[in-house]
Image (cartoon, rainbow over all chains, first blue to last red):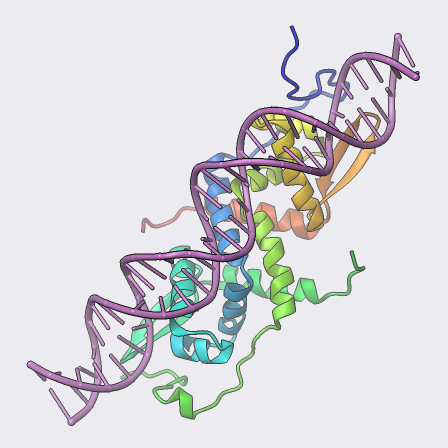
Length: 118
Length: 118
DNA sequence: CATTCAATTAATGAACTGATTAAGTGAAGG
DNA sequence: CCTTCACTTAATCAGTTCATTAATTGAATG
């Protein structure tokens, strides 16, 4: 009886032991990438590479409303990508650590390199 | 109080020049992060760090159906994260370059580090 | 050429995302 | 207190994403 077509059966290729990350690690890492994977959020992060900034400053600079910026920051904070600090009436956000800074900086540098078009 | 040099109670009246990445670059970089930002895709990529593999091998190892794997690979290929090569009946996929390999490797290493509870 | 195999593509739909508007919170200053 | 300011949260909803099933492609082999 015919197996449902799941995969190649011949395996002419060498049988291998696959190294494969565990699901939990992939979930955690993917959550971080997903948080970075939005143009608006990434643009905010690009601002925070240089400065600690409050929500209104970010909103002003981007021409977005406060609520949108606040909600994006909340998501980034939940992934520990940014950290918040209150000072009087303002809440200042900054990148959590140098890993994040490197990720953002390198990614933006990378896409600015010359590419062949697709 | 220890006010940092960014004191901006009055930021609306103190126009500052923010360093802010252009939208196009953010869009490109975010597209790549978004492609990495899915546990299933990231797990496939973790396999490809070590080996060049055909679609069926990946599907077998992950216990996913061919179609799902193929469609994920298509997306990753469209972002130039993986590259494909036909050999006979099989199509082998590998990571496009060392940048991708580093991103995946570092991300998975990072989430495996000890963390304080949240 | 017809068949089989490996992979891709199409089509559908449930679940998720992100922007918007409005309402709510809490610190600061009167 | 009461108000204002800076921000957060809630609620809604259009748009997107992802897995699943079925149909299709194209290389390889009889």
